[in-house]
Length: 319
Length: 214
Image (tube, rainbow over all chains, first blue to last red; front, side, top):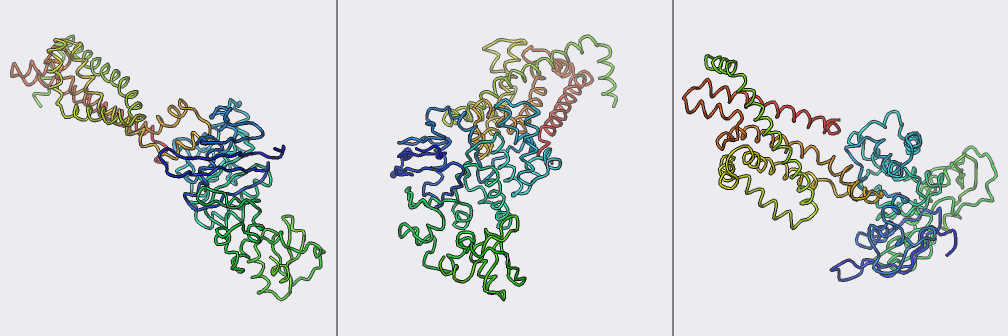
């Protein structure tokens, strides 16, 4: 293995007691350190099984998993889990504890001093966009679903784990808040360079969030590649059908502007009429802007609002 | 009203006997409740962990609940004789079912996801029990304790029948003498204690569930 792999799975499989078939067939995977990897599949495809073996909620039937080069079978489960953030769909917040007590749980167990925990709570609440002064003393029951999941996220990051496991964390949240949370987790990941394994059954979510996507079906990894590569070169029929490779209009919804834009045309040619879009926009959105605007290109800008490229129909056709 | 006045006068004339009876009554109820707690809460936790054991114990406890208090007192008499100890044993047996059942239900009712995330965070079994399961089960446990306390305080009256002492002595004497003032001298304080414990445990319960009203 190379030093840049945060998680290495070697031939891991899982067959539950009394089960006819394995939930997961022998699988090899390497998750690069600092990468955001989504695991996409329908329920029962083995994606959650795969995830839960990383923090030993399930023990593999065969094979081994290395985290930062260390075999996790040799680390005590509680010790291992305290180094890995874990977020689940139902948040699992402790409703008899205030927000600050929830967030302070793992640092407290690890024996951090009060001062440090206190600062950490403020930092984390700010990071997930909830004002500490307003939310610290509240109980989970007083928060909306989206806010609760932000706290779930903050709690999972409390002890500053380098690896985060997320099991359909936004599955129970309404579409508007889900989009906001997705943007948030992308921002946080960019800022903190966590290695994230993120399980979802939502194709759009998997494609939007993942640097790489693991597509799973019937206990087997079908493809493990960058979203764009999955779209352009689906490994098999299953993946092709899943991402609608043949439906070009649908496909545009998965491709981001920054992946196809013409960077040579980044020069700020201030045609005031040209529509602008952030680099994370999908080509679907870009196409809408093109159709609605009067110019034949859309100016793509980065987070700091600098022009970084352009997208014309030519780029869209190539996508 | 005359009767109540009569009861009051009786108490004032027999202050020593009355305070002795009251002390015995409270001591008996208090000890029975305490021992009941020490038995029932751990047993309830064990039941919540072991499905097969819980079926057995819960079945037993539920059938025990149907047996009237007096019957339990009478049943222990041939085994343990008369006096304070058999009364204490009988009352302890009486106090167990509500606490045991509610502890079991309280622990069982903790959401699976909450436990999963606690395990996923790296909490060990002891931490999960004391910081998550018991606090979340506390409201139900307390309501079991409240039921048990009222039951024990009122049933302690019957301890007098097997020579256990307490305020029941006045009630039996009153009945025997056909003197209702004497009877009320025992009955009214018992009723007041029962109501008090109901109210006090009710308040404690409310404090323990502050997070729910928020």
